[in-house]
Image (cartoon, rainbow, N blue to C red; front, side, top):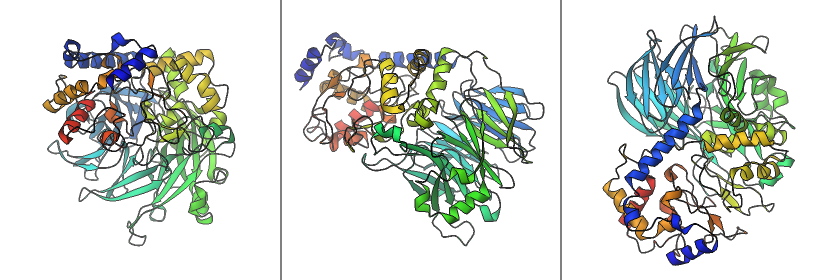
Length: 637
């Protein structure tokens, strides 16, 4: 088999000298190469930051005089005086901070550090870090319980929620959520924590996605309900309506029609955006024990509002504000009209109707670039919207429903090439009717976890799984069929013709976009020791990797990809072409599902279910232990 693949490489013009084979080269391809990869990741990360702040979340102090703003690219937390509208103080925290929680007494702040797997505890008075708490892998969302003695942390990479005893400073347990939990909300009565999971359940590629809102009981610290939400992805922020009669949740979502040919974008209806209204069961002794979910769209008939993300209610519950991150808009929802709409239109119809927004949206207001979270003042007069790619806050006058001004948080005033490219990546205005942006299908520069029918007009043909953009700069060619030799081709004419159905980016914008994508770094590898040393199982798996000639196609010197397409007989009956690009293996454990079609839901399934004829490597004669060790090695890459 190895000879056959090597011949294919030679016939197709690959550089055979780049292949790393058994022997002396293989013996040195472990720790030193891993260190080099880590150094490269750090260099790319630093190059992409360029001193921008990139604010992502904000919370009010209990007295309402200050806003605490988390700045992702500056590794910092800001304290902003809302009266003077200026930054009062800044404290450095860990790498890639994502969210902040304020203790009930206002004396402590807790900031999650996604790349350090920690939480920084900050003294609110001195505005200094007083201790660092361990969390799970990739902590993002965070909240305390009502007593302030327990911290709940959503771990986006670990797919779980850490429960931390703040008195002892130790993690008590981890509760399984679902895929990529990002946002948490403590219920108004303090009895529950709601967990919004970014990615849906892993399932067959020919079925719509199903997402989950996880419910945790704060007293027992157990998961009490898993609320399934069919047909949606990317659950974002969570808000709970005030008042006993309005005690429901709003969760912004994206609703993909990934089973339809994406070439139909010009006809609309490929990606829609809105909210789910969740009536949580068993909260008042009257409603059923099981929660109910209704989806409602916020798009107009001829204009979409991509990237629904942040949400907050006014204290009187009269309005709910929702940001559209890829449209640079905040929409004000009249909740009385929303509730009337929910009563008048059957729930099974609302998810597919584009006439709801004209009934329930009181006004849409322009914000800065890439609006994310929202915080509303205690008196309900002002709302503050975080502009992630604008290093600013938009201030909204709620009674007048108009923008009052902008608070500059600092950072460079000139847009660099990478920053302009990042704004292009998150802008839906380049797509027909603003249906989606690059970031719609690549949240966090990563994957959405579903398969798409991208370019073939026939329903169900050539469906391919989404691929990550992390660390792809040196992994050409692109697309699963390898037809695009570089990112300029991938992101230029192809996007304009097949995806955006528009003129796409001009040459300068395309150059900026490609520069940004090339700078997207690989995240830390939690399956690899800090010193780069492999475990005995990983060492054994590495030996199997070379003994089975996996390196012929997955070459270590080029991010474990041959940078060429092969036909190894893995095409399905729905594929019109059997040649597929060899995917890179860097951080492969973080991006299921696998295979070009997304059929394999785990690394184990790649060989135990979808390799019966040894087309994807000779594995039928491997023992369970050998296969497990091979997978452990792949996780270390």
